Every structure is written in structure tokens, then in C-alpha cells.
Amino acid sequence: ATIAAGPGIDEARERLRALFGFDDFRGVQPQVVARVLAGRSTLAVMPTGAGKSLTYQLPAAMMEGTCVVVSPLIALMHDQLRAARANGIAAATLTSADADWRETIEAFRAGALDLLYVAPERASQPAFREMLASAPIALFAIDEAHCVSEWGHDFRPDYRQLRPLMDAFPHVPRLALTATADAHTRADILAQLGIPGDGLIVAGFDRPNIRYAIRHRDNLVRQIAELMRAEPGPGIVYAPTRAKVEKLAQQLGAASGRPVLPYHAGLEPGVRAANQAAFVESEDMVMVATIAFGMGIDKPDVRFVAHAGIPKSIEAYYQETGRAGRDGDPAQAVMLWGAGDFAQARQRLSEVPDDRRGSERARLDALAGLIETAGCRRAVLLRHFGEDPPDRCGNCDNCLDAPGVSDVTELARKLLSAAYRTGQSFGLGHLQKVLTGVPDDRVVQRGHDRLSVFGIVDSGDARLIQPVARALQARGVLVATEHGGLQLGGPAKAILKGEQPVEIVIPPASGRRGGRRAAD
Ligand code: ADP
Ligand code: ZN
Image (cartoon, rainbow, N blue to C red; front, side, top):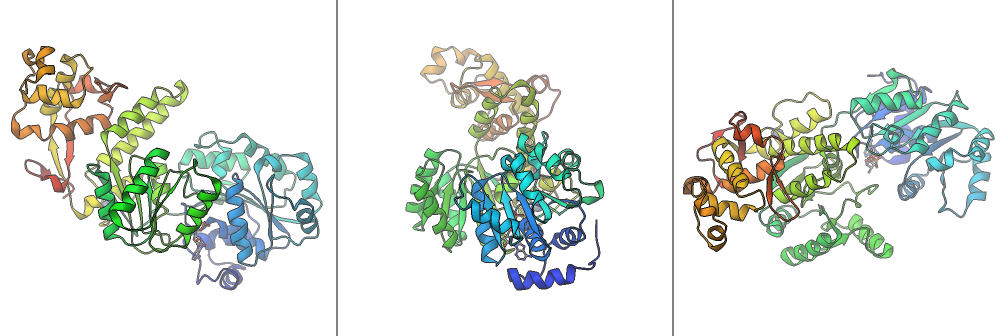
């Protein structure tokens, strides 16, 4: 939907410069702002970092009356409040954490507020509706609007109360904002919030300045320290647990000599705030953090985001890597994954309630697809978000240095039958010994040296056992139990019967002998 610069947008650009100090709008910002200024309800789907806040803050400063902003997280609200005030916009919050309610309500009634931030729980209370009736309202802005949809990943029942509230003010336009892209959720947001279909504005999701790379993790500290040497600017390293955050922060600090701080929900609030503030100020600090870190942090010059383990989904990966390079300068996103990550993630699937397990598994499979592709990473990402990108981007690991692809069907069958014949209770180390014919005590004691699979893999193929096992685990063909034994999963049967070929990507560094080049 392109709306030509209509009345108001030139003035808006002036105000953009004067208030925010920005040269010009970015991406779909002018379309969204123009629609809002024209009083038309809108759903803007814009990726994280695309500048959603500006699309209601600027109209709020220009329009008569107050813009009521519904936002789900008090911490985020206060960040936004500070930023808005710094730009000379009259803003206030009404949350349980505020002591100045009286002043806020008075200012609101007097029409002196541009922005009023509230949580959805508050917005659904009758007293709030009465309060709105007593003052001029210019706009309803609904941040994180996917929370209104059960299709989204973060449904919040209180968001359902917004519709009746807004319906009580039919002349006030609505602006819903989200970074969640899938078509199902979008349609649902439009319906739930009463926004017409022609009010949908979707920004492109590509972040061309981010270079994506996904590698197997063989020496985490060394791999990230190398990245830090190549990239002296600020970076974020995501680690899966608090304990790993602490340890990795220490190791990376020692290995790199650069300032490295930890961040996770288990730290004292004061320490957490201090670490975050230090990071935002710094030009060379690396923050090792759980995914609790990053939401609402406004640091445009993050030069790299590294994942020391797999993210939860492609959406999460996009969101987390999206914190790199918001200033538009070159930035890197590097994921370092291991087979154990998938073992754990697939184990957790068994704890997910039945009705959600299928979609969770699909998320994990999509992520495995991104990790295992020999093609362009960006193309996989953008296709996931419903776009139709070119086959190659020229700015991801696979485009820059095409990996080889090997048909490893035979080896995969040997590995699967070794797991099967040894009772599906041994780890990869043991299976490797059996397959390559190493008769150590354990192998002999169990009689595994007398199995038909003993020694059937020659030394040339032995080095491929690990990458094949890794790929099979990522795909759920081999599933690690809690005790570390490898069991056969879903598609194992078809592979064993020879009905399904198995190909794996051989990364350039470990040689491409025997593999044909992919993506050429
Ligand atoms: P989102 O909510 O979409 O994740 P934000 O509203 O937090 O994004 O904006 C991300 C960053 O981009 C902020 O630092 C903001 O100041 C900056 N920004 C937004 N619009 C512009 C613009 N037109 N020009 C330059 N910087 C902008
Ligand atoms: Zn690419």
C-alpha cells in the first residue's frame, strides 16, 4: 500500500527534524504517519528496530488531544517515556509503578499530554474509560498488537478488552503495531481490533547490513573470541542459561581482554541496570546475556550478535539478531550450534501440552532447516516471513563461501542400524567405536564386536560420523534421551529402508572433498 505524500506529511517531516533530529523517515514510516494523520485506522507490521514508536509519537505531537498508548511491559513503557520526553514530547505513564497519578490525570484532563502510556489491564477498567471520556483523545496506539491474537506467540486476554474500549470512541483512529509477520496473526489482529483490511502496512523484513553466519560449535570461547577480535565494536552474546552466561562472560573477558559483562534475570536489579547502562554507553563492550536482555534497549551501534546455542525459533532468531546494526552500518549475526541444543529442544517438546506440540515441532523443524541449508540464509529467513527474496544475497556465509553437499545416505543407515542393534541406549562415542571397529572393554563386554555393524565404516568415512549424527539429531531422526543414549526418531525407518536419501552440508573449513558444490 503506497500512499503518496498527502497533506500533512511535509509538515510531519519538518516536525521529525525539529523534534527527533532525524533527517528523514525510514521505510514505511511516512505511509503509516500519513494514514494516522488522515485519521485512518492502521496496522503497521514492522520488524524490530524499524522505528515503530515514531509512527505514533510524531502524530501525537502534531494532533490535537492525547494519544493513548497501550503497551504490555511496564519496563518498556518507562524506556519509551524517557525517550519521548527527551524529544520534548509531553508524555506520562499510568502504571502501578507510578506515584504521580494525580498530576498525570490532571494534565491529561487539561489536554496537556501528547502521550499517555497504559497497560492493557488498566485500559480494560471502567474507571479508565470514564477518564478517557473527560478529555480529548487523538489516537489509540496498540503496541505489540499480536498479543490480541491467540495465533500469536504471546496471547494476552486483556488485549481483548481494548476493542470495546475503543468502540466507545468511534471517531478516534487506531494504530496497531507489531513485528510479528505471519499472515494468520495479521488477519486476526485486524479483525480483533476493528481495523479495515486496507489499513495493513507491512514493511520489508530484510536487514541487508546484517551478515548471517551459522556454524557448528567446536570451541565456543575460541570462536567468539575470534569474532571479537575481528569486530571491535559492541556485541551481544546470547547464552541459554544464567550459569552459562556467568561462565562465558568470565571466559570471554579473559580470552579477549575486552570489557565483558553478564546480564540475566538472576542478577540484583541494581547490577542489571548498571550493566545495561554501561553497555548502552560503551563503544567496545560485549554483553553476555540470556534472551531477557535486549527488549527495549536502544543501542543502534551493536556490531554483532552471537548465539552460543540455538534460539527458540526463526522468529526469535530474527528478533535477536535484529538488535545488531540498527544504525545501518555493517554488522554480523553468528550462531554457533551443537547437536546437544537440538537434543534438549526435542526433549522439551515432550513436556509441551498435546495441542501445542505440533506447532512447536514445526518451529523447531523450520529452525533446523535454516541451520542446515546449503543455500542463502537470508532467503530462508525472508521466505519464512512470506517474502519472495532473490536466491542469493551475497552477504551470508553460504553465499560468500558455498559449502559442499554430500550424499551420506549409506553412512546414515549404518549409524542408525548401529544405534538400533545396540539397543538404542548408547551415545555417539560408543557407536563410533562400534562402527569403526574399536574393540574396547565396553564394546567387547556388551558383545558389540560381534554385531554385523562392527567395523563397517572405513577410515575415510569415519570423520563424517559426527557431522552426520549432528544433522540427524537436528532433524529429529536421532533423538538423545536424558541419559545420553541415541534413539531412532520419526523418519529413521524410511532412511533405514532406503526410501529417503540423506544429504548434509559440509562446511568449507572441514574440506569439501567428495562433495559437490552447492548453490552454484
Ligand atoms: P521498534 O519499536 O520498531 O523496534 P524503535 O521505535 O525502538 O523501533 O526505533 C528503533 C531505533 O531507530 C531508535 O533508536 C529510533 O530512535 C531510531 N529511528 C526511528 N526512526 C528513525 C528515523 N526516521 N531516522 C533515524 N533513526 C530512526
Ligand atoms: Zn545469502
